[in-house]
Image (tube, rainbow, N blue to C red; front, side, top):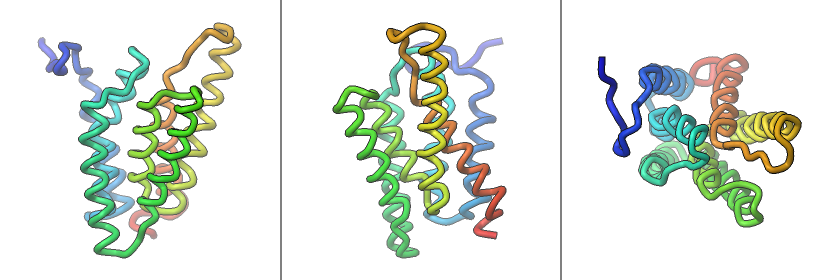
Length: 183
């Protein structure tokens, strides 16, 4: 049995497509077939591969983040024009800008800042826009504390999977608390 490979030859895991489809379906259940769903679907398409690459190599490749950011920005722009709601645009700027500041200060990588901007753009509601960063940073803090305890100060952790976990947890919370398409 052969598995499809990525452009650099790594084996693409068979679980990635079902996870992407499940995340995209969750986004569509929450946002409906509207322009506001486009950024979440774009993120869902690359999330499993980004998490896997970051976990293995401690990097978030531009070849995945830049196209997803472009699609997400187009979706947010269409959503702002159609609905007048700029929540995702503000969330993308705030989350991405905050992580960019941390990257400049040396706390996280530039890939994490780009991923944070993408996650922010994929948050069309206030609950998601507040929940994703809080849950992602909380998960990363717990992961960092565990790494510190197990491996000392020199131990590095990939932060992207934690940021993505925060977004997924915020999606689940949105569904549990508000329901599909705002209830």
